[in-house]
Length: 374
Image (cartoon, rainbow, N blue to C red; front, side, top):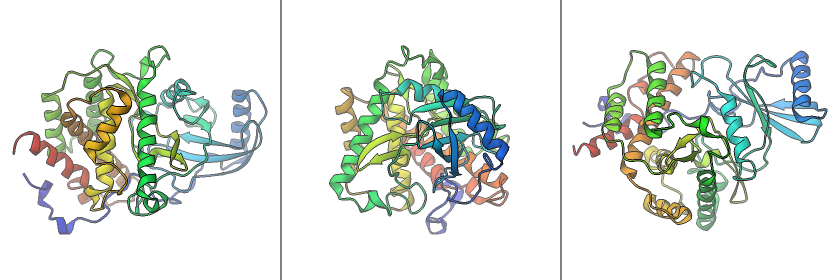
């Protein structure tokens, strides 16, 4: 089979669907009243054990997608000059369940063990502002762009010397291994496992449920074949570890070219490290060759990146063909969900053609065809 629905390459837009809503496209209503600000300040004061006073509050320049709503809040009084609030979106969202307690658990467990923002407070039930939220410390630095132009097309990482680009990716791999190396059982992170006995099956089942909920009866045949192919050959998994779940350059805050913090832990879980590495490989591909963009000259090729991680981790990564197929399947599921949210929010027309043909579907189809020997 060729491209899904036979869409010719010449008809494909250079940028089909961003993982992020354009910066400034919506105004946060989280702290838009004096009463809300007072409730938030009182709650945060209790959580931190000392009085705080709020200053300016605004979304970041690139405020992310619809998996959460992010707000930067300056403190004119308190232990930190600025905090980051991540709350359940108001309206259609990426995920059926918004479990800020899960993210808080990860950040708390990784404190001092891997570069993550400090977890400060969590309201899992929305008692304070009407929506569940997580508050973390602000980490200064620079973040590779995930919007177009992406980090592979413009910006500080694109403009850097190849040696500095390599420093960045090596630092990312070292930080990722720190996540994988923690004793997640001792840290009380076992609740993150979607299936404690069969972690790979748990991850597959979670994405199956997300797709079933989001797509309803409107199933894409490429995604359905993807699930069948993945389930048909689940490998024997190595020892599970803590997973970042969304390993990619755009989820990194850097000081210079060194990782200062790893961001976005909604997809964290327990499973083989191969899941994170395959996702990183496929995300890098989507932002470069998958979008008609040349890879950064300082970034290692796929084999070299795998070898670099293996050198840090001290073990060989196995069955990466299967893990990359699963990564492509997850990407197609999440892309479809993103598009359906965009339609629900009126940013795309109902039944938009990208639901039937997009870069994630084409990649999943390509890997599925290759694996089937066609």
